[in-house]
Each structure stands twice: as C-alpha cells, then as structure tokens.
Length: 216
Image (tube, rainbow, N blue to C red; front, side, top):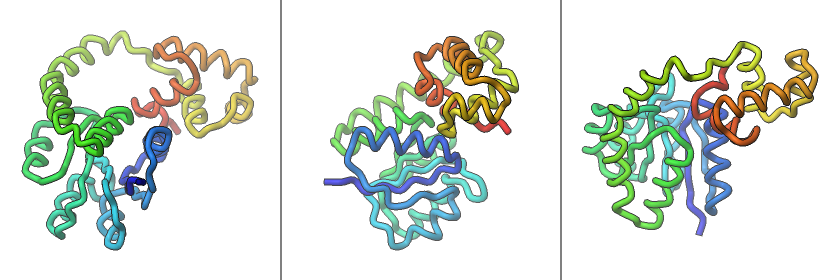
C-alpha cells in the first residue's frame, strides 16, 4: 500500500534530496509540494494525505504557523516538522498538538521518523527526541569549539557546489565557471576530502543539508 505524502519546503534542493531519499526506500505517492506555509493552507483542502512533512521556518508564512492553522481547521493528518537545531520553545508548543513530530532538518532523520510512525515503533520518536534535546548543548559547544577548524569554501568552490547540486556534470560545471572538467573534478575531490565524504553524490547531500548550495 502506497503512503500519500505532501511536502512543504522552500529549499528546492533539500526538497529534492528528501524526495529522493523517500523514493528509494518506500512506496509512496507525492500528493503535492508547497514552498511555504501560505501555499500549504490555501491548497491542501482536497488532498488526502497520510503524512505532511513541513519545514518549521518557511518564508512568507512559517510552517509552524501553518501547522497551527491546520489544526484549527480540524486537519488531523500526522505531521513531521523540522528545524536545523533543537528549539525548546518550538518543541514545548508542538508537544501540545496531537500527531506532530519534531526533528532535525536532516533527510535521514526525517525518513527514520516517518518509517517509525508507519511501522508503529512508538518508542523510536521518544528516544530520538530525548537524545536530540539532551545533545543540543553539546552540539552548540562542539560547533563553537570547532568553528575555526571547519573548512570555509572559496567563492569558486561555492559556485561548483551550487552547480553540482543542480545535477550538472563536471564538464557542464566547467563551462559555467570557465574551468576544465579535470579542474572541476580536482575541486570536487578536494571538497570531498575537506568535508570527509566519499564521492560527489555524498558531497552534494552534505552541502544541501549544511545549506552550502545557495551561493549566487
């Protein structure tokens, strides 16, 4: 039986990554896609969803506000909503709303939450949320401590990342940034080493989830 899902996410590349992740692993129908909370509440009336996946902080109207409106309209569809970091005030409010699951903005985490709900693994979400909440201080401390050691991509590297995330080949990227395909390949190898990933696909995934792909 296919699962009916709609996604509200303004970042095209993260949305694509999320859809690809789900598509590879379960049978589902993508009912609709929304770029912000306003589109969601205006277009969802006649959609039959098993799940809604919503970024908590979309532009124009946040996903957070859209969730409140959906529940006021008596839409009880289970919702997975996410943010980059744990936010206690958001968590405390969402706890008061039935069938809302709050997690990190990470495609693997979102998928694991989704499948745990489908498979009725009721302890998984509670265990995950407890660990995320407990680790938030450690994560912030680690980020602060490591900030000086994190590789800061150059302008040309950010352009290459942006084009790679659009699905361009090394030759096509080279044409865009006036470099040979071999030079682009060397940049990608260097970036893969700096970010400790194995290949171009993993590099793209990492850069999308770390929001390094929106360079203009």
